[in-house]
Image (cartoon, rainbow, N blue to C red; front, side, top):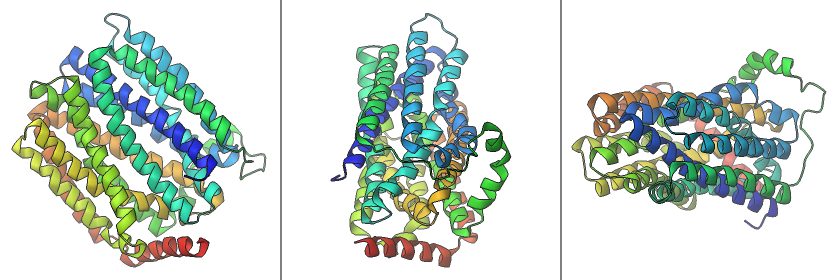
Length: 411
C-alpha cells in the first residue's frame, strides 16, 4: 500500500465494486419481487457474464495494444453512463424485465477490458516482485470485502430507498473510479506498438491468441480448475435472494446471505497468503476446491438464515486458492501476452459462472433454493474428481516454485 499507483487502483476498485454489489442486489430483488421467479432473479446475475465471454476474447487484446490506464478510464465512464440510464429505466412503472436485463448486458460490455487492463497493469507497477503477489492478494481480498459491504448495504439501501436509487449510486461510483485512476495511475505506452490496433485484426487474431495462451499445460490446468470450481461455488450468490424470501425474509436478509460467501473468501485469502508457504500452496488447490463443494452440500438440511450464512461463509474460505492461482498464472505469462491471457481467463470464468447462475437458478426454481445450492455442492465433488485425473502435479509444483523464486529474487 506504500505504492501510490496501487493505492489509486485500490480506491477505484473499492468504490466501483461496492456500487456494483449494491446494484446487483437491487436488480435481483426488483426482478424477484416482480416475477416471483428464482430463475429470473439468478438470470440477472448470469446475463452480466455474457459480455465477459465475447468482450474478453475480442476486446481484451486492446489491453496489449493501447495504454492500459486509458482503457480503464474509458470503461469506467462507459459504465457510469449506461448504469445511469438503467437507473432511470427502473423508475418507469411496469418497465419490461427484458429491457432492464438488456441494459445490464450493455453495461457489462465494459467490464471485461477493464478487468484485463487492471490485471495486466499490476505486474508493470510492481515488476513481478513480492509486492505484486501482495497486490494480487489485496485486490482479491478487497473484492470480497467490497462484496460483503456492497451486498449488505445494498439490502439496506433497497429497503430504505429504492432499486433505482441504488443503481444511481452505482453510476456515481464509476465516475469516481475514473477520476481516481486519472489522478493516481501513471500513463504507460502500449506494450505492442506496431500499428496493429485495428478492429479487423482483433477478429483475425482470435484463434492465434487462443493458441498462444493455451499452449501452456500449466495455464490450461489453472483455467480448468478455476472455471470448474466457480461453476458450483457461485450457487449461493445466485440463490441468496430466493433463499431469504422462501424463509419469509426481505432485502436485508438477502444482502447478508449474499455477503456471507465473499466474507469467507476475504478471510480465507488473508490466512492462505499469510500462513501457507508458496511452495505448499500449489499442493492445496484441489483439496480446497473439493472441501468447498462438500461444505455446500450441507445446505440440503435447509438451515435457518444465520446458519446458512455460516455454511456459505465456510465455502467461501475454501476459495482462497484462487488468489495465488491468479498470481502464478500472470507470473508464468510474458508481459506482451498478459492482456490476452487475462482476457481468455476472464472469458473462461465468465462462461463458468454464467452457466452456474442459470443451472442452479433452474434447480432452485424446480426444487427450491436450498436444493439448488446443495446440488451445486454434489456436482462440485464430481467435477473436482474429474479434474484430478488430468491434473499436472509436477507442472503445478514448478509453477509455484517459480512464483516463490520470483518473490525471493525481487526481495
